[in-house]
Image 1 (cartoon, rainbow, N blue to C red):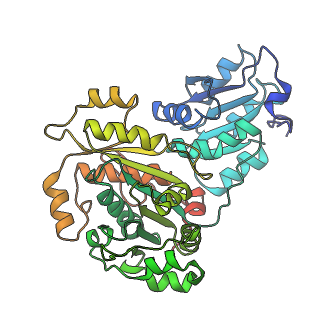
Image 2 (cartoon, rainbow, N blue to C red):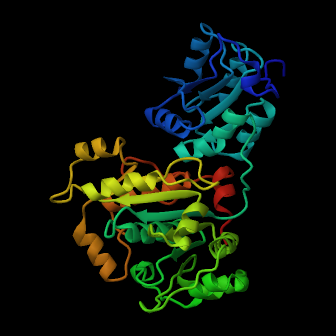
Image 3 (cartoon, rainbow, N blue to C red):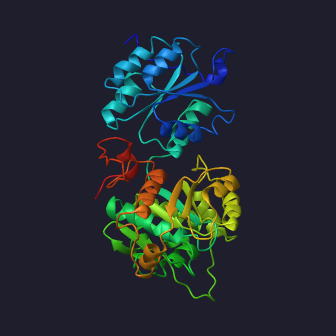
Length: 418
């Protein structure tokens, strides 16, 4: 089609003109705008222009301004998005490189947009900053897509800023949601072999298999993983140890990488409860994650250590900073939200209200706290969506509508159900 968007093979930096901005974005909602700003903060540290509005707004604005080298448009809510994108080509220069955000998630639409119209990449709502960084970031920085392989499960680490911040509770409930409610093959790995509580919180048994894997990685294979991980539900397993306090685990270098690689072949999600320490095991696991979650409570010491954790070097698979979870919000005697925001110089991504009776009782009984309704479940659902950058799978927070995906990236990321 003569009106199709034509993409240049030359990266933007090689063809820059003074009158053409590097990137201009149009976002139809404040949530999309925030995801784009945070997700592209490292790809374009100097910032970029972003306006609120859909593709129609973009076309009107672009008629009065120089065409940017790269353009992000939002087709959410558009009745005929393909026609609108075709119309867009008539108001921009032909070498513009276009990225699209929308609300349709079927594979046919993705192919029509990228292969038929020449759009560089398409992402569907709800947009997460990690999703933006992972898929839009490399295209904006280097002009090529990320080389990250699609095969293998997604690895999420959960780390407490301080002892007692609630990281183990968050990790256990997150893994339970993925494995039980979302029905995705999930394993919860407890990296504290001496005093970990992940197995206890899910009513599972610890086993010597984890220690064996870390001391003798040559024994790790899929059959070993099957035997070492203890079942909690059909699609949820726990891999945890309970070693004597006087025993020292002889960690073999690269054992964590071999273990995680084997777990990724078997599970859609690998949730790791890993404390921060100077142990090589814990440092290696943090570097292997696709997404880190840092859990803090509203205390001054937690603010200090949260900043230190967020400043740690990132692994190769981590395009953005970790997800920050504020647990026990409005805790009696704790810092208020204004004080926390000032201390952190940012707002927490997820806020879990202080619900000591619910959480303590659930942990004591070896149950999960998000089985019922309420603030804890709502926050955990939002965390699940954030770390997996997918739509809410089998439930929605109040005011949100559950969405069933058909053929889009959801299935490519999560894999088929057994």
